[in-house]
Image (cartoon, rainbow, N blue to C red; front, side):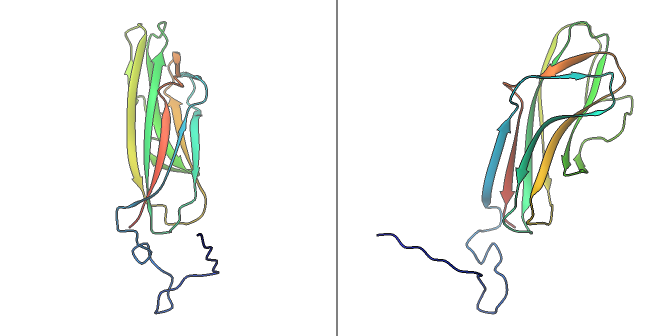
Length: 167
């Protein structure tokens, strides 16, 4: 036997909006998980300081008190002809930088000047406090550092996951 319960709002006995704890989610509970992989290899140039979108993922938090754990993995391949390759990786929440660098500083998150083929697996995570229950777009990006090399992000090793964590 199955039943359907439909309501317009839920309130505590005091008439307030329920917290995640009131609804049975203990602090630290995972409320939702979303994940994406890079659909196809993505070429990049270190000569361009323009921001290149690597991938995006949207989430609508269930509660405005939730935190979002952003997990990124990057499979990065640097061309063999690279005299020097530098670049920065980062994360934006909508247009706000939440992880990484926003400037072309002459240093980079990754750097190679060997002139040989290089493949890197790197990743980072960030615990964000967006303070909203509205839709959010997280964007993983690459930004070159004025050197003439390039390469690509591998679709087999590049991914992003978002986890909403109850508070």
